Image 1 (tube, one colour):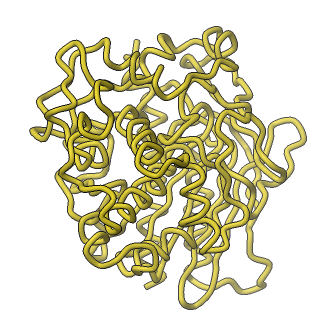
Image 2 (cartoon, rainbow, N blue to C red; image 1 turned 180 degrees about the horizontal axis):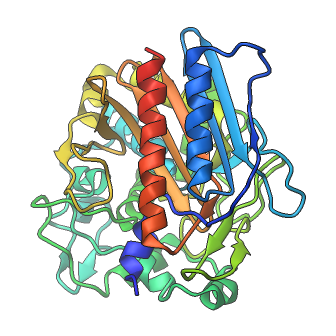
Length: 391
């Protein structure tokens, strides 16, 4: 039986669904080599068992889109070309960008401690906000426990159905995490924890007097014209069009439609945003090319630490401040962030200059670790090929 941590942290998980039709997103009679490669790799990801796949690649030569599988298992309609998506933890990059803008305005410092910013909030069971900096939160070097294992204590559909409508305040989630001992002393190691970004959202509101959602709208969404990106909080419904998401809670178990999210987690600054691949590509391209941060703050965001080899990330991955760096097979690497929840996984990636950007979404997850590994390999291959072959 797989552990809860392995099950919840799997990057791309999917269901074994056979004979799903593919839908090429380009109507051109003679697609380019890049378009052909993207469609082939989308089909390969579908063939590992993902119910629906969508890809959007932006390059100086134009846009390539691809879809494969179906948007839902009842009507078997095609996956929408630029449908609405749950961004999950990709939200963290938006939040980190706001924090770094505040750093540039001298309203925050990356070296400030959590205790200075949120007195008395991080304490108990060995957790000490006096030793954790804002940089530690953004880079996952705080050692803080992840609240996610308290709000989803077992991997059953019964727990999902019974608790999916419950919502927590950020302070409640932090209090849950503070019941557990830290994983390591702050700054000495790396471990992904959603609690870090719940705290980052609280800090934005404490410093500015406005919520992190308002700050994201004013500082990022409105200036970039990202009209299809939203901060819905615990609102459970995706705008149309969108693909359905499916979760398999136990190996060989039934498919459960989880398009309605599990609100106890990913309902705040750690993962609540929704949007489209078009908007997400525009955001990452603007971020990488210096449109959102001054050079000093962008350099700080791109200052990385190694990610442990057992973390589920590709070999050589490093973590910055809300932004991962991953090597490419053709040399160099890409910047990006992913997100996943019940029934979906999304990855956004851009070359370091922001000139080539790709977003991939998969709309099902499986409890079988071997299936998960195959799908992770297919997803990584798709991103690598898209960014390398479009060069």
